[in-house]
Image 1 (cartoon, one colour):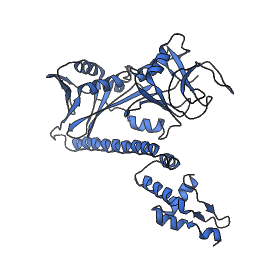
Image 2 (image 1 turned 90 degrees about the vertical axis):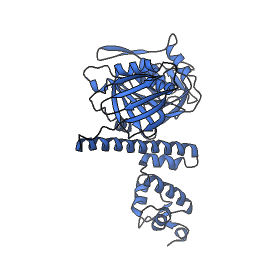
Image 3 (image 1 turned 180 degrees about the horizontal axis):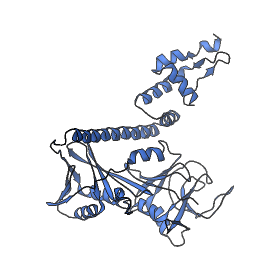
Image 4 (image 1 turned 45 degrees about the vertical axis):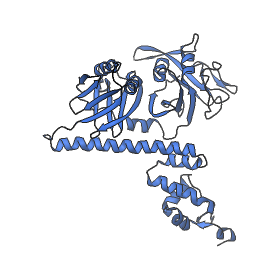
Amino acid sequence: MTAVESELRSIGELARASGLTVSALRFYDRSGVLAPARVDPVTGYRWYTEEQVDPARLVAGLRRVGMPLAGIAEALRNRHRPAEVHRLLDAHLRRLEDGLADARRELSRIRSLIDPEEIIVTTRLVLSRTDLAAAVDAVRFAVGADPGLPVLSGVLVEVEPDGVRLVATDRHRLAVARVGGTVDGPPVSALLPVAAVDELRALLDLDGADTAEVVVATDRVTVTVAGRPLTAVPLPYDFPDYRRLLRAQLGDVPTYRIPFDGAALRAALTADGVPVCHRAHEGVEHEVVALGLDGRGELRLVDPDGVVDAGGVEGVEGGAGAAGAGAGGPDALRVAVNREYLLDALGSGDGQLVLELDGPIAPLAVRRADDAHAFSVLMPVRL
């Protein structure tokens, strides 16, 4: 052992101090997550410093709770920025909770298959009337209208232990919203037809009650507001596994996470002279806009027919008027999207929103800064 190595920890010593196995430490070295301080050029033996014990323990903890490799790497890079790590932990906890709710729903379905005569169990919820109305508004625009895809012609209602999640998609965009509330009964889901969703939205405008009472069973959903009930029969289809789609299309750690002012971007998108190009899809022509970053990393509208050169992205000055930092320089990003779809995703356009994406051909997510459960995902348009 050399004098330098005597001041270092061997891979076995770090394994014992951190809770990681030797093979795991080798894996995280090969993955670029936790590289040793020194590697013996002859034997290939790995040596670590005392300062690497705490990062290794962090990796071990994240590994135990099933954090994906990309998330572990991101947490390690940001371990001196607690807010960023907490954001990663919160997102992972939501994935774990979603997975548990999925498992409970599937087990309930399996039980009904084993014993078809089993008494139908209902789940009762008490939700804020205004919050439920806002959630319906947040997803209604994404309901599919293709008669050849009836499974997309409704809104998925997923009951969770402490509330309900609404989901809709037409393949080109996906919207998710959540309402917290009081739940009595097992997790259950139902696919409400769009006509029933529209009736429900009208019912939620009734004054005289602060809450909406919801009863969900396998064969019906009943919503009561101010003493007036509405009963709907769910569609007999299995809604796509949107969580799997999200995991496949949106990474755990997006390359760009850009805060922006929703009202400012909406105003820019609806202003006279906004730069657009036209693209046809399935015989229908759509207006397409492009988003980019200015020299300060702030979101702006750019010319979808413009070019990117050393001077930056050609575009409209002050496009979104956003306040916040994004990754990369002014020529790092240009992504095109259907203008109507983007306006739908912005909703009323009030408050701070966050744009998340990985590049010009990857799906982009529009999230509310104050509600991690509410977001829309849009497919980009190739320019």
